[in-house]
Amino acid sequence: GLGFEERVTWDGAGVVCCVRVFRVSLRFSTYIATFLAAWLLFYATYATAGTPNTVAYKARVSAPGIAPVSLHVEETGSGPPLLLLHGIGDDSHVWDDFSQGAAARFRIIAPDQRGHGTSDWARPPAYRCEDYVSDLEQLIAGLELPEVILMGHSMGALHATCYAARHPDRVIA
View 1 (cartoon, rainbow, N blue to C red):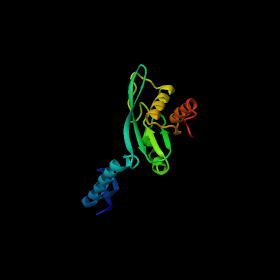
View 2: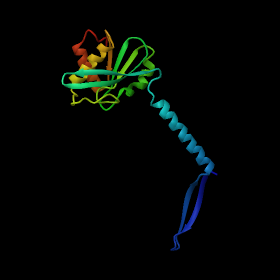
View 3: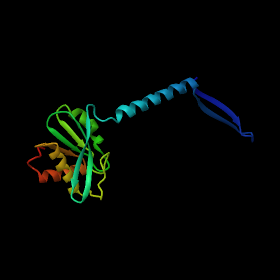
View 4: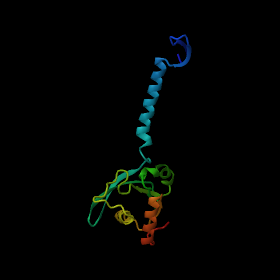
């Protein structure tokens, strides 16, 4: 059965201790274990899978004196291109919830910026704003996007702003 049970014990010195113990049957604990296993399977399969109908690929970018870097990019939806740039310590999946709704109206493009998520680390280290903006320039050119909408969070907003300053004719918003 399931419930509380009171147990009375003696400590040897004549003091009575009354303890309430939560009792769980073997059958009930099996149900709990089955539920937890099913929840973990669901979480591993769906909660970390990103946005439905998402295409993931690698984009190579390079700069003089630095080994080429592969950027992990996820795309979903159709419409005007909306490039989503995550903040420091994040990756492209920070945009998953937003992307699910926005994919009905926009072509969502969400890269893991260099050194984040499953994108490569730069060797030798190259993590200045100019390095990230260079990656954006090459990604946008490689995708043949004449115009793009940029949205960024924290560090991503800085990179979007710097890109927009360099290429005001290519940024819609």
